[in-house]
Image 1: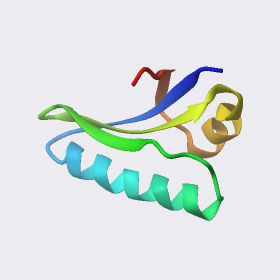
Image 2: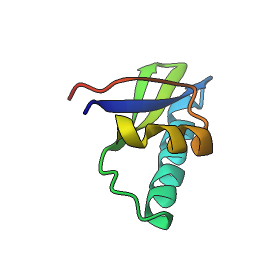
Image 3: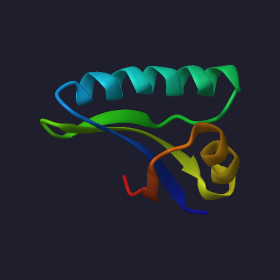
Image 4: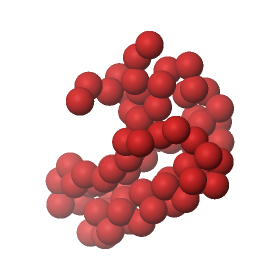
Length: 78
């Protein structure tokens, strides 16, 4: 079973701050729904682009994708 990284992109001068804030909401969603997701994060791609993400098992991805509306996804490799 593959791990998938669901990604939200943020752009602009406040991209990293926005991604950090979005990660807080992702963690709240995980706690509220008692999910077994342990990997979340945010990363600055450039000064004007940052991402927030969470990692989920492939068989659990569809309901999360539909509920949280990530911008994109990819196979996760640690």
